[in-house]
Amino acid sequence: MAERVVRIGMLGCGTVGSAVARTLHEHADDIARRAGVRLAIARVAVRDLGRERDVPLARDAFTTDGVAIVDDPEIDVVLELLGGLEPARTLALRALSAGKPVVSGNKELLAHAGGELEDTAHASGVDLAYEAAVAGGIPLIRPLRESLAGDRVTRMLGIVNGTTNYILTQMSEHGWGFDQALAEAQRLGYAEADPSADVEGFDAAAKCAILASIAFDARVTIDDVFREGITGITSADIADAARLGYVMKLLAIAELDDGDVSVRVHPAMVPSAHPLASVRDAYNAVFIEADKAGRLMFYGRGAGGDPTGTSVIGDLIRVGRHLVYGGRMQSGEGGTAERRIRPIAEAHGQYYLNLHVEDRPGVLAEIAEVFGRNGVSIERVWQEGAGEEASLVFITHRANEGGFQATLRELRERSSVRAVVSLLRVEGDE
Ligand code: NDP
Ligand code: HSE
Image 1 (spheres, rainbow, N blue to C red):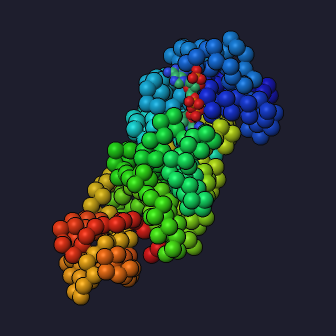
Image 2 (cartoon, protein in one colour; image 1 turned 60 degrees about the vertical axis):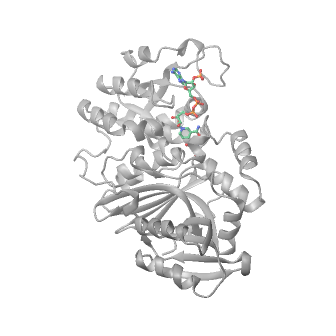
Image 3 (tube, helix red, strand yellow; image 1 turned 180 degrees about the horizontal axis):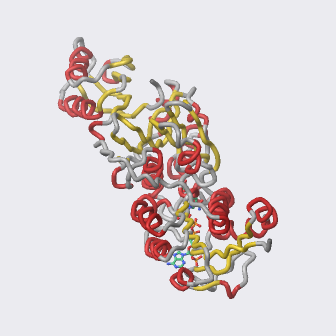
């Protein structure tokens, strides 16, 4: 049988697109042998035609006209690696509506418009694949969607942003300041063009929405995800966490709670014995709890052209094989479950609270009464310093967020509480 060539129209040829082009060239024969199809990048859309690019592609393959590529009848698959919402959304929808499968690595696109894209792909009967959109080079979406399809995932705790993990690692292990660590993360190419997407938690929130949508058969968008970044984390917080046997991480958390979905991104103290605590530098990991499979962890490089390009090529191979040999990806054909998104006030978490207090008899009892009345149970409490320097430090049991916030509001009003020195969340302890 003649070898079937699948012609790819690639939108974007930056960090990831150029890595995909180089790997497809370098591994062309291996891929053709394994997959039974040959993947060829036929046309490429970029913004700047004059830019020098280290890619094995003919100069006349490049254009600035993405629509012309999507509409080209010679193009079998559209690969979207532009980033951002527009024109990525319009081009992807145009391709899917015209019956062309789409592969994308664009978490922002999927976290905002995933439902619309999935519906369009269903209606046209074509594949939409986006393994690279979450945790770059780590196979995660396919294991969740296919390998674990017979199980019930109940909880995911993820370190899904390499930049923030790199910053927190440098701050805790080398005593760097936040600004120095961020500048180095940018120099190493981990950070987004606008690094506030990383440090304010938007990037992790997008990935959290995508993972929750797949794991819980739900429609979760980035706007559903409660989000706090790492800009408020100080070296003192990190030192306090270390002294108590915890490591500071930015976590994306997705839980199924009585059929509701709870999704949030925030910094958290993770016990140093937890598998996520050992995930350092720009590495990513997602810790999954499922009813039958138990606990699993997926670990690897969450960013960078080559690792991310590997995920993209895996999707291209699958989509290409379906075009040649038939079949479609599993992508929730049975529809989505009706799931309520729990507001953060109804979420449950564990908290670390350091209060600068008056050092006199009865203060601890007074403060403990506020915790108790709001339904927040204290796991540990101790005093640090004395007199003007006295602090009371609390670690709670898992408690309702609303109850904890009510406790905090009341404590701020008490004259015996001079200041809230720090408030941190704890995850993975119970
Ligand atoms: P880059 O910024 O490096 O590349 C973007 C490419 O898109 C460039 O080639 C740019 O052209 C082109 N482009 C942008 N806008 C337009 C437009 N309007 N018309 C035509 N071309 C356009 O991004 P990355 O390669 O880093 O990321 C691509 C996608 O992959 C993003 O969605 C990102 O979130 C995702 N991703 C990236 C990872 C990474 O480590 N970099 C990891 C995981 C996912 P030109 O070159 O001329 O500027
Ligand atoms: N800026 C992102 C990160 C790149 O730091 O993880 C991968 O999505």
